[in-house]
Amino acid sequence: MLSRIEDWTATVTGLGAALTPEALADWQMGRIRKALTRVREKSTFYRESLAGIAVENVLTPPDLEKLPFTSPEDLLRDPEALLCVPSKEISRVITFRTSGSTAGPKRIYFAEEDLERTVAFFSLGMTTFAEAGQRVVIFFSSSIPGSISDLLRQGIERMGAAAEIHGPVNDPEEAGAAASGADCLAGIPGEMIYLCRTCPELRPKTVLLSMDYAPQSVIEGLEKTWKCRVIPHYGMTEAGYGLALRCHSGKGYHLRHPEIFVEIVDPVTGRRAVPGQEGEVVVTTFSHKAMPLIRYRTGDIAWMDLSSCPCGGVLPRLGGIRGRAAGAISLGGGESIGIQELDEALYSLPEVRNYRADLDLRRPLPTLTLMLDVTAPVPEEPVRRRLQDALGDRLRLELLFGELPLSGGARKRCIHLGADAPR
Image (cartoon, rainbow, N blue to C red; front, side):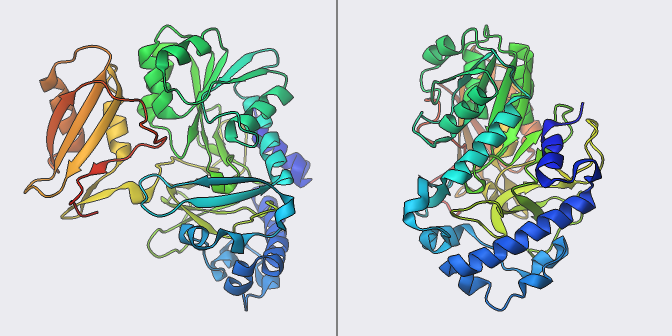
């Protein structure tokens, strides 16, 4: 069955049966040229950064290389400079810190039209998970108007299902009671696997995972224990929360093509990656009214799949998404380690529901201390051997066991470094 997102793309673009990758690219480039003209007129930041750019010559996706990137540092330095509307048209401001960053918070602005587009996209995407009359429990943020939970609730109710906002899984017993009998659960990977290992008796039909990446070990753990279907969603605040949803076939992520243009570039050179080559995800939010971003570097790693989808779709899709490139920590000698590796190795152990990783680079051999929060006693040596097999000889392992708070206030996982350790 064709992805609803691809069918929606054909309708929104007006291309209908004529929808092809080439026709879509032409349509998107027309919208991008209009956005370039607008941001250069309305935004003080883009008036300067796009000075001298001949917008009329930006005709094809390769032509985007003529444009400078927008960086997270640009958002940190002066977010108001990227605004394209007066303050009276701002409906929501999101302030947040990037995981693992010591820099100040980012600030993203939304007009009412931007929020409405997100609600509509969520409503469309949730038809993959739920049906009219079913009950969905949301474990993201609070119910503050304009929050991701509130927008998702609106989208769910719009497609005829009932939505309840529980908020983050701080107390798993309380969250388990809220989830009991629900048809669909929506949350971030680390909290959902924690809830799953704590309340294995739950039986949701579907689970929506949303963040920058979802470990395959978490997906498989949820499906095995809860006997459910799990579909990850890839999103970020800068892109208006919604960006791509994994196809029900499991082969790639269908993109929000009518509203956001996605490129994959080499993280070092900034040049466009060839299809199938991993690189950094770069987004142009050409449909956004309040704060359109031109070639914004997300720091996430993925690849573009141009093959036909098993669902019948023909448009480009995102391949595997690996989260932040900056999350990898150098161990010296060309070796590095990232939180993604640890997630895959540790969450594949059915007893592990949470962990903390502390890395000491000051020792002759980098030492990784893992505090494991387990639901049942596990023998240390088999676990050590399994982890050493997965991580190799790059570092020395020390294992500890004990109960950990679920998130400690951080929604994204990271490897903690000693205070004196170089980053």
